[in-house]
Length: 370
Image (cartoon, rainbow, N blue to C red; front, top):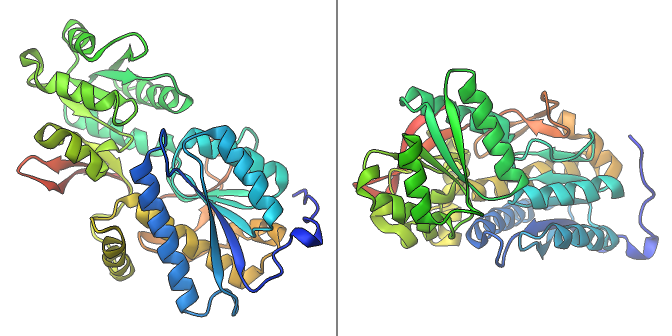
C-alpha cells in the first residue's frame, strides 16, 4: 500500500482528543432524516467509547461535515478533514456522494469506513484505504429480486430518475430477473409525470412498480397516483432503496405508504447489544431508530476498536481492516474482499425485505430474508 506523507506537524491532532471526520447529509437535497439517524448512531457510539475510557485514555471526538448529497461538497470536506489531522473518516448515506468521498480519501491516504452507502463500485480501482459496513447493492437488490419472483412478480416496471445509483439498481434487477424469465420495463421519470406512469403500467401489463426515485418527490406523488388509479388496484409498489423506512414517508402518505416492500439491514431479532443500543437510539431520536442509526453506531464501534489496537497512524488503521473482528449491533463485523467490490467489505450484514403493516403502519412485517 502506498502511504502518502503525513500532514505537517502544525496540522496534526496533537491535542487530547482523537478525531474522526463524519460525513452526513443534514440539509436538502440530502435525505435529511437518514442523515439525522446516521449522526445519532455515530454520536451515541462516541459517547459510549468515551464513557469507557476513550481511545487509550484519550477522548474520541467527532468532527461533522454536512454533505447535503453533493459529491463536490463531500470531496472538499474530505480535504478539510484531512488537513485537520483526523485519524479516519466515517459515515455518508448517499452512494454517489460516498463514491466521491472514497475517491478523495484514497488519493489522500485517509482511512474511510463507509457506514451506509451501497453502490458496488465505491472506487474505480481496488483500495486498501476504504472499508464498508453496508451490503453491496448487488447483494441486497438480488435478495429483493428473489422476493419479487417468489411473490409471483416477473413483469416489473421501474420508475427511475437519472443517477449512477438508480441505473446500477435497474441493471441488477434486470440481470436477476432475466435469468429466471422475468422482464424489467424502465419508465424515465425525466420524461413522465405520475399520471403518465399509471398509463404506462397498464399498457405494459406490469404487476409490480419499483420506485427508483427521490424522496419525497417524485416518489410520494407516484405512490398517490398509483394507489388512487382503479386500473392498478392489484399492482405491488416496491421501494428497494428503503424510502418507507423513515417516519417522513408515513407522514407524507399515511395509509397509502403501507404495504410497500423495501430493503432493511437488520436481523429479525436483535441480540443483547443491539437491543440495548436500540433503546438508547430511540431515546436520542425520540422515535424508532432505522437501520441507518445502527450503521452509525457500528461504524464508531469498529473505528474505536481499530484505534485502540493499532493507534492513530492512518496507514496502520487502513492496514487493520482485514484483522477487524468486532461485535456490532447486528452481528460480528469482519471485512474481506468480495467479488466485484473494490473496498474491504463486511460480508454480509443481515438483509430483510419488510413493509409497513396496513393494520398498524408503525409496525414492520418481515416478508423475506436473505
